[in-house]
Image 1: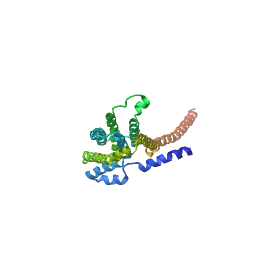
Image 2 (image 1 turned 90 degrees about the horizontal axis):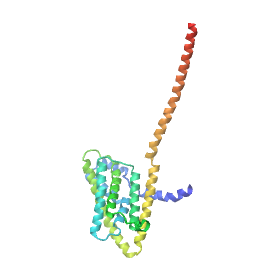
Image 3 (image 1 turned 90 degrees about the vertical axis):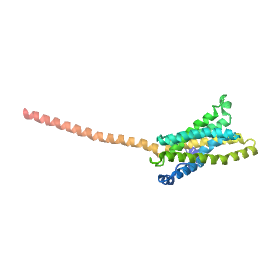
Image 4 (image 1 turned 180 degrees about the horizontal axis):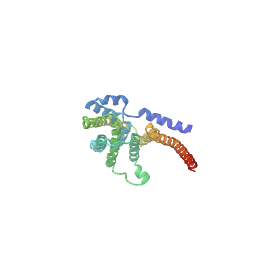
Length: 267
């Protein structure tokens, strides 16, 4: 057990350091925040969203033409905008650890796809790349929505707040790409084998994220609290049943004695 803890503790610490949620200070500010505040929060969340950034790096890794980049990023943007807007507006929610686990899987998938894993391991063509980026965009948008729903949005200007947050996400995404794309070009020119190594690192990082999110799901207080109240309720019911049976038995016993007494009296 100690060996397992030693192996996984760095992974859990790494995930804890880089975990990106909505801080309590942000939640407090957003209660009375304006549309610009939601816009800034969206941009901030995207720029610091390491799982989203890793996926986008995987998406643009082999792209060089602006039109190709625009095509893939548009597919991702449409995907995350759909689920972010509709899930938040209609209050469709899910456990954010599980959603983030799927997002971590999308990072692993993209690295695997870039390494031509489908041909190497399964001897098949990879699924349509633009379609898969759009599908994973839907999942990323749902993950963003779970974060936004942690804030008390109210009903006043609700759709405007959601759209402002989504607009901030899009701007944050563009800023991240402007920084990442030139760095990728420089690395690929300087190092011949950078492609293979980089995508293996991408898969490794996605695996760490997946382990962290699954650990969070199975050890989170919310999941534990859902089980414990049921156990307590059963114990309370059992503890109430026993005295009731005893009282009923005594009462019946008393009635029996009373009936016997009356019978003797009649005799």
